[in-house]
Length: 416
Image 1 (tube, rainbow, N blue to C red):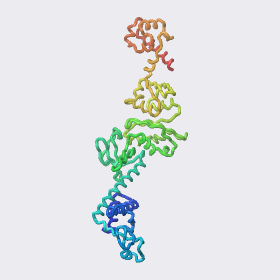
Image 2: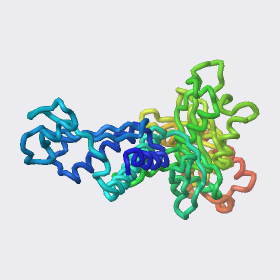
Image 3: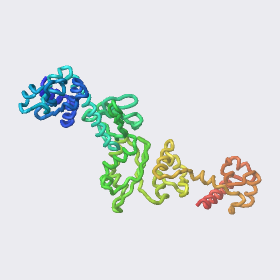
Image 4: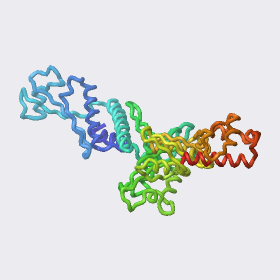
C-alpha cells in the first residue's frame, strides 16, 4: 500500500466522521510516529520525521543517519558508500537524510494504524460534540424523537447527535411519537473519558420558559423588557414577573401580544400551561397582590423585616388563591420572596378575639346572657353552633341575627 492509498483510506474514514483536514494531518503524523516507534523502538524516534501533504496525497518519512566508515547501528548510521548514492557530496561525519518507503511497515501495521486513526477520529468527534453543546447549555434546541423508553426519550438532531430527555425533565402531559419534532432546553452536558458526551434536554426548567419568551417577545431580546423572576409547576401554572425600562411600553401587553398571539404560542408549546404575567413593582404590597392572580386579596398585612405577608380573601376566593396542592400560593411566594399565609375573611374575623364585655353596641342584657353561659369572647361566640345559641334564655332567631351583625361589624372596624 503506497502513501497515496494510505491517505485515501484515511481520508475516507475522516469524511465519514466529518473531521477537518488539519486535524487529519496531525493525526496521521502522530500515527506514523507511533508506527516508527513500534518498528524501531522509542530510543530512535528522534531519528525520524514525518510530513503529510493532504493535497498531493503524499506521506514523506525522513530518516536521518550519520555517515560513517563502518556501520555499527543500521538505524542511526549509514556507510559512506551508501550515503553517496543518495547525495554524492556527503563525507564521513555528515548527516544523511534518507526517505523511507511506507511499504516497510507492511499491511498489518498499516491496518493497525487505520484502526488507531478511526479511534482517534471518534475521540475528536466526541470532543467536538462536547464543545459544540457545551456552548448551547441554557439554550433551546430541537431534534426528532428517535426512541421512547419508560424513563427517557432519545432525541436526535440533523447530525444524528443523540440527546436524552429524562422523564424528570418532561412535562407530565407531554406525549410524543417517534419521528416527531421536539423542543427543549439543553440543560447540561456530561463528558467522561472513554464515553460519548451525554447531552441532557429539559422541558421543565424555568430557563426553558424564559428562552421561549425571548423568542416570542422581541422587546425582551432588545433589553427593553426584563424578566425579573420565573416560577413554574410545569404543565399546570407558571408566574413570570416582567419589567419595562421604557414607560411607553407595557411589559405585560408586549408579552401577551396582539390578541394574545405571543403568549398563546408559548402556552401551546407547554401543553396548555397557564401563565400569569405580572408587572413588577418595587412596592411589595402591589407586587404580592398582582402575583396572587387570578384572585386579589381584600386585605394584605406585610412584615417587611421578616418578609412575611398575611393575605385575606373573600371566602369563595380562598381555594383559588391557594391553588391545587398549594401551587398558586407557592409560586407567588417563589416570585416575590415573601412567605405568605392565605386566610379567608371569616377565619380572619374569628382570629381577632374581642371580649364580649367590650362590645359597645351590644346591650348589657345580651352580654350577660352570653357571659353567664361561658361565651366571653367573639371567637367563642363565632365558634358556637347556632342551635346552641338559640337554646340560651332570651335569644331567638331575630335576636341571634342582630347579635351576629353587631359582632361582625365590630370585628370589621377593628380589622379595618
